[in-house]
Length: 335
Ligand SMILES: C[S@@+](CC[C@H](N)C(=O)[O-])C[C@H]1O[C@@H](n2cnc3c(N)ncnc32)[C@H](O)[C@@H]1O
Image (cartoon, rainbow, N blue to C red; front, side, top):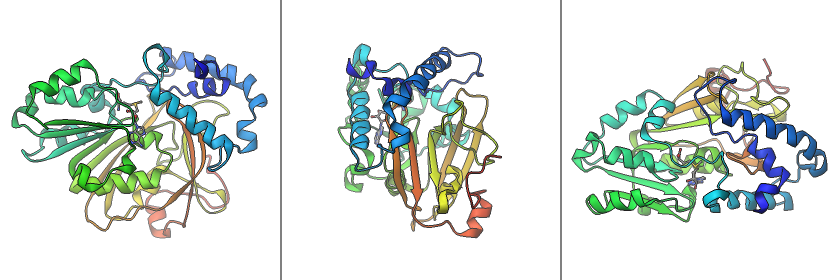
């Protein structure tokens, strides 16, 4: 398989990054990651991907990274990269996401709906449907770019009421309309579109449009500058996986960007003990006039998840900036 032999791909595998709730010393994924990272340090000077900026949108490098990413989505069987985890359980979602996720799920009303963006096999939804919570025939939907449904999904769907669970694939979240999907009380994204999307602000706009008033979006990013700003990238000499820059290249923390969305009440919780560390987010929609500060993609390198950089289109308001612990003018805040 071409992808597996590609050194640039190996570079991304270093992030393979399906996180593990253990410390740095412990996990196999992480040990593999470090080994691959050593390969990269040798391979990169020949590729020159970072140095040339070849991955800027519209450039040949960007298209190449996009098609590598498509290769990951299309991978099947042994070709699925080890870091591309598609079968997390509901328990794993509950363990990863903000603690409120479990109570939100338990409190879903009879007509409320749950959407899982980037659902992979849709196992979390299957676990939910076959649990005691599903007795009231609520409705759940799973979205994935590629169809990862298993025989387990098909059998469970056949046993449930028609339409109780839906699996939609073949498109990215941003390509769905409100008519197609409807509104949801809970939206989750565990290493799905929020970690993989090339157009992050568009992704957030769409997600919040699908969210009911007072509904919550639960998600996570790994290896990202935390709200407190005290952490460094997990891999030495590598950037964070998702970075936002503001005016003059100053850093904007993801948590701060989220806190500047109007009509959104946001909590950010950094989990330093994970490998790589993660930050989990809860975004509650508190009114309908949602406006997401626009981000322009400036870098994309394929991976599981990909490495992404974005440029904030307009500065964040200063007052909100302080509240959100945002960027320091004049460069990256490495403290
Ligand atoms: C690593 S898998 C995660 C699967 C699942 N959440 C889990 O934890 O087992 C990534 C999933 O995100 C999906 N995905 C990535 N970008 C997406 C986007 N923009 N819109 C919808 N799905 C997306 C992929 O198709 C895939 O289903």
